[in-house]
Image (cartoon, rainbow, N blue to C red; front, top):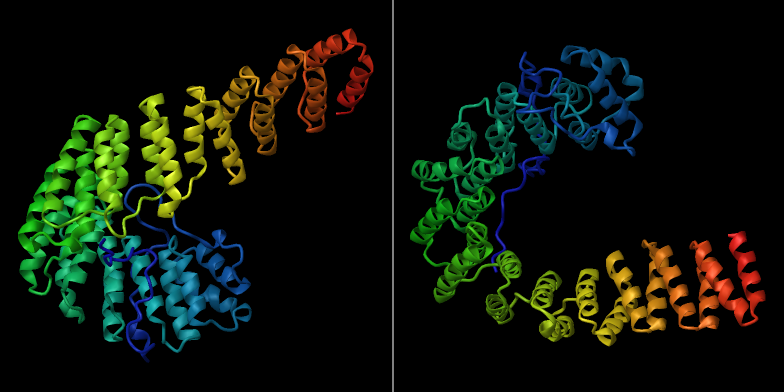
Length: 522
C-alpha cells in the first residue's frame, strides 16, 4: 500500500527549517505596512474564524497582554506606541514568544504586522526566525493582504529563508481568494525560480493540493499540463494524480475521474505505487451510480482491471465498497472483496470492516446469524477486536431471532469486555428474557442499565418485579424490589401495591412494611 508524502496544510505553516538560522538584516527587510494591511481580516464569504488568545487559557501574562493590545489597537499605526508604553511588562521576547503571538493574531493582520516589526527592532535585533516569517506570510495571505504578503516573500528571499512550506501557504491563500485572478496560484508556481526555489514535482503537488482543498479541482486539472509544460522538473508523479483524483472524489465527478485515470495510466502506466489514486478513483465510482448496486458494479469492474494489471487499492476503497455491499444487500460481492482483502499482505481487515460484514450477514435473515458469529470469532486472529457496535449488532439480531442462549452469551462477553449495549437492545433484552422466564439474565441486563445510566431503567426494573410476582416467585420479587429501591431507581407505587397484595395473601405483610419504609426513605 502506498504511503505517499502529501503537501502539508498551509495553516498553520510548519517551520520551514530553511537556512542555518536567522540572518542579520536591517529594518528594510520587513514588509511594508501599507494601507492594504488593515486592522481586521478580509476573507472570502463570512467572518473568518481564527484561533485567538481567548482560546489559550494557559497563555503567559506578557503574551496575553500583547495579544490584548493588538486586538484592541484602533489602528496598525497605534501598535508601536501601545507596546512601547507597556515595555515594563514586556522585558524580553524570544523567537518562540513572537511565534506564539502571531499564531493567535490572525484576526488582526495590521496590528500583527506592526508587532512583527516592533518585536524585531526592540527585542530580536532584526533576527526573526524562519517560522515567524512563515507565519507572517500565512497571516497576510489568509486575510487576502497580498501586496504586503509578496513584500514579505521578497524579504525572506533576501534573507535566504524561503522554502516550499512558505509557498504552500501562498498557493492556499491565492486559491481560496475569489477576488484574485483565477490563475494566480499557477502564476505563483511559475514564479518560484525568481525566489530561488525549483519548480519540481513537490512544488507542483503543493499547487494541486491547494487548488483541490479550495474546491477548485477543475482548475487543478487544467493547471497540470500548463505547469508541466513550463517546467521540465515539474513532472506529475503518483501523488499528483492521487491529489487530482481526491478532488474528483470530493466533487463526486466520475467523468473527470476517468479522464484523470486515463492520463495517469498514459503517464505512469499501471504502477502499484499509485494505490492512493486507485483508492479515490474506485470510491468515486462507488458513489456515482443511480443506485448502490450500480455504483458497486462499476467499481468492482474497475477493481478487477487493476488486479489483472498487478495493482491494488488501499483500505479506503474496501471500507467504502463493503458498506456499499451492505446497502445493496449483496453478500456475494462482499465475500469476493473480503477474500481479496484477506489474501493481501499488509491489508488485514479491521474492526470497522468486520462490523460491516457482520451487519450484512445479520440483515440477510436468521439463517446467516451463524456466519455473523463466525466473523466475531475470527476477528481476534487478524488483530481486530470487537467494539460496542460489533456486540450490539449481534445482540440485536440474536434477540430478534429468539436465539436466547447465544444472545445471553454475547451479552456476558460484551459486559466482560467493558462494553454496554444500546438502550434499545437493553430494553428489548429485558422483555425477551422475561418472556422466556430467564430471570437471571434479565436482571443482569437491568443491572447493566443501572450502572451505565440507561433509560428506561425504571420501566424495566418495575417490569421485572411484576413478572416475578405474576409467576408466583414472591421471594425473588420482593428481593429484586429491594434492589431497585436501593439502586435509587423509582419503584412505582402501583408495583409496590400489587406486591403488597400478593405478600399479604401468603402472610408476609411484614415484608411489605419493610419495603415501604425503604421506599419512603428514598
